[in-house]
Figure (cartoon, helix red, strand yellow):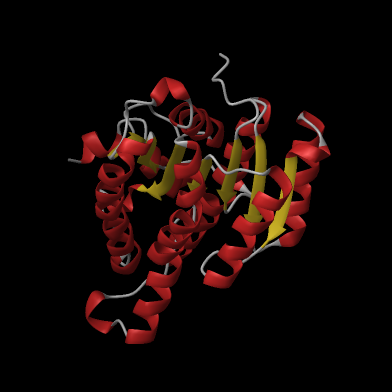
Length: 264
């Protein structure tokens, strides 16, 4: 399906691996120009090469950056404009996963979580919105884990940041609707990524079980009977970024194989 994203310009945060990488590749397949950004330069360069094979080197810009840093965010937006001349799509994908008890959280830990798990998305949107307003078109999509709907033990900080971002997104969607700019959250999980595999291995060690047993438990909570694929999340994000989703804004779109419905 042609989603009409040819010649659109997207910034995808956290796009060197996993879901973010799949989203960037989906945009490249649709003919968009894409800025990819992450802290790990080696992984970022590998994704850049793969995207250049899909389209061309001219249509991809790789910027190593820490998107919890306001300075780096301004640099990413500035360099994107200098390269492509516009910004139409913004995908934020910055998760924060410290494990801690709510009663034991220190101020510096809380502030670090806010910088990375909430303010990063707010700052990225704030920098990109003026250019979206100028062209009276834009798509802002925040990628969140299912912790925001069903917090796990130890996820007080990440779940709180995600809850703050969902509320902020709803208010931002109302503000930007007259400019034909939509704001949505994609709530995804469990998705088959290296990050999930590492998390399950850690959980297995803590519980003195095999990784296979932990995976089977996770799959047992999913009515579809399997883990999701990064490409499936990417297809959803590409749709939400298109004109076909122009009447969808201010909402959370869940892609989890029915897991949350099963739990609730």
